[in-house]
Amino acid sequence: MRRTRYQEIADELRTRLGSGELGAGRLLPSESELSADYAASRVTVRRALEVLRDEGLVDSRQGFGWFVAADPVRQALGRLGTIESQLASEGVHSERRVLDFRFVAAPARVRTLLDSDTVLRVRRLNLADGEPFALVTVWCPERYGAELSRADVERSPFYELIGVELGGAVQSIGAAAATAHDALDGRPEPDVLIGGLGVGFSLAHAAADHRWGRITVVERERAIIDWHRDGPLAALSARALADPRTEIVERDLVEYVNEISDTFDALCLDIDNGPGWTVTEGNAGLYGKSGLASCARALRPGGVLAVWSAQPSPEFEGTLRNAGFRQVRTEVIPVARGVPDVVHLAVSPG
Image (tube, rainbow, N blue to C red; front, side):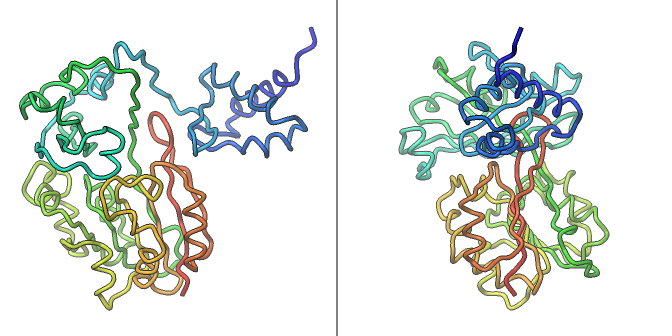
């Protein structure tokens, strides 16, 4: 039986996926590029990709494009799972520790998404076999969180507590410890500035690499710094904090780089969700014209800016180029499950 054109394209792409030519988590060529490669319409190409998506081989996300599936977690909405249940199925003991539990004024984006001026903000640390692996912030509308206690959210997942049937849900699970070292020009003991402490993976990664010189981390939230010094994250960060190369600075990053006269060989940003989706008010400015100008001033000639993001942003690539950065590129970082992270890399204008 003669196969249709979209089936032929699906067969060829399936072969490329099976050979490892297109590895897990990698972005596929755009629909227009595939259309040109296979001399077919975009409708035909999209139909072929949809066949592969139905087979669990590829997936897509708006604003991201098509990518090779990396062991996605597929769950019915009626029994939405948690990372804890997934770890338990793999024989790993999981634990939640609530670090902060309070009602706050909703940041602009959270207010828009949740339609609530006041929200319950819960920050928690997730551990696997006693080792920290994720620092999570949950935002819950006041009308659903008013009856919850700190003990409640430490004991059970939110979807079991709020008494609301979910019509949809998204879970994004992953971590990236990106390094800009390989993008540098071989200079000895380069100095690195890390924007955002978070759960400490970027700091731990840098401190574990003997090639770095001075390691400066700027974090504006005192609570997060305290969690690393003598709180629940102390065990994870003890070695990195004891490293003589490490310095922790409690400041807003933009204020810091605007006021110092010192410069660095690399600047690694891991703030909010990246340039395409900021939640905390004020963070968006870091990825705009003035914020990037501040970053450029903090970099030595030929220095590298590395920006982690939950999704690629062609617009941000353009903003980098307009700010004078060179050799702009985006690298896909596969994660254990779900949509890959990305790191935007660029070389300073100087």
